[in-house]
Image 1: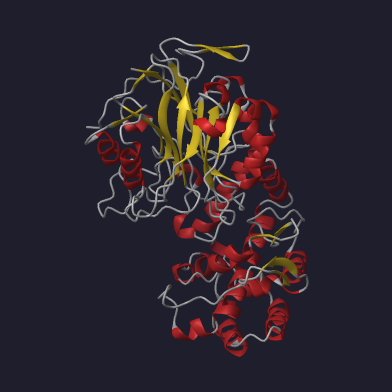
Image 2: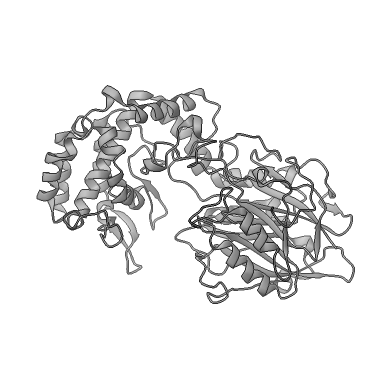
Length: 540
């Protein structure tokens, strides 16, 4: 039994049952209402193929199905590694690594000749759990997939799994570009000292520590720099070879169309959604995983800049580039912004050691004219992006309740809660989260109604085109697999004693105010892997 019951009515359309009308830039209010929306806009994913998306082009589904079938049953296509990453390629890589002064080159050559070169590309390499456990492909991918330079450029490694835009029609074309990226063109990046200096991408790799990844042997730890770069080269070569075999020419076109929508134009597409008529009457907008580029775009978009004060936390994280924001309608402010709005910082002690990264929590005290009796209403507003397992969500909400100290509290949160209870307690069960929000003094209600199966705000699953195949899902099972992320993660929470539901709680996965069941998100028109959640509340 999930508590507390919502006072809203279920609906997935924003166009019905509204208590507010937007006319000429003013709101005609009834019962001192306020309209809220929360959206995890999702950080830019550098790999356009990592998660299934929804494309009208039939070649996309054909490719995703074909890749899954090949991984499941490669048959005669499970050729030795040396047939896609050839001996001449290895010799050139070996010479370049030696020129860097790296230790262990001879030992890596022994591993190549006695083991890696003869492994089948799918069953012996891509599906080898040991390679994953040792991070021999995923670790160097993390450091070199996409590099933001100090002179304002974004440089991508030549691979299938990022925004690299130069065609790679065969293995030789790929390797020439790949080798040049790592060894021939220094990039201006920050050193550990904080100073900008030119560095080759190969110098950006770090040794893999056995203390952190115990699957690694002592011998492998000693040669982890050249070994990981060799494994990354093999991984990239296999993916390029497979896609050129399964979808010659077409795969690059599909990749570029996804990159254009979800990487290059992501900020603008997000702005386009927020400026649609369906969101013209939103008073408070809570955003999570907002990049610095999107913050700039929000403030530069005339329609949004005119309507909203954009509030961001003082501890914004410019490196991870994922921050929570609150947008407050300017016409609601009880006085100048500098007087009506003030940031509230919750220290580590208040958060009880919860895993909260810099920029994930945005909290402001606000004096707003909501139309209630007695003039302006003072509230505490918060936007929060929870950790992957949702374990920080309850401690953060508890800290916010304590901080509110009797003030009405409104929270937009990606709580990262899960529909199924984890028997080991490693992930936050949605039933426990809402029950904990409702318990004790100053309980918080949520805007959902009905069973939590109707609250799901994510619908995605990993493809086979990413370094962690143990997390991949077949295309046909992206809705049903236990590895898929179809969960009720996003909430609008409110002080039950101060507000009551006055309209429908709605999900939007189209950017047009409607929810289409079974749609993998993001899509080319909806740029996030989380639905927008919105509702209307009324002051009691």
